[in-house]
Length: 133
Image (tube, rainbow, N blue to C red):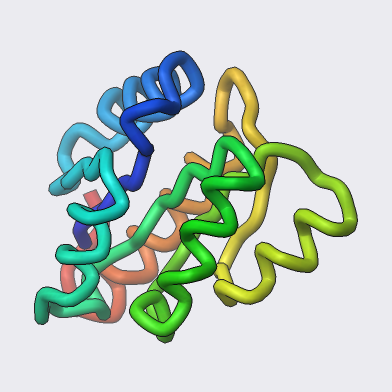
C-alpha cells in the first residue's frame, strides 16, 4: 500500500505536523508528498495502481477545499482521507463532492486519521494475500 499525501506548500504548521505524524507512524509504508496543485494534478493523471494507494488530502482552508473539488473528476474512485479546515455544515457538504472514505477536521494529533489509515493499510495487505506485520 502506498500513501499519497497532499499538503499545499502554504499550509505551514498544519501541514508540517501532519507530514511528521504520517512519516513517523507509517515509516514502513511508501509515502509520496506533493505540495502544489499542479504537481498533485499531474500525479493524478499518472497511471499508477489506485487499488494500492491511499490519498490523504489536507484542505486547511475553504479556498484549498474548493481547489481540490475542481479536481473531483481525477479523484473519482480513489481512496481518500480528507482533512477539513472546520466541521461546519457548508464545509461538510462541499467535502462530500469528493466522495472521501473518511472526513475529519484538522487536529494536533491526527489520531483518527492514523487509526483509519492503519485499518485501510491492513485491509490492503489482506486483499493482496500478504500477512500482517
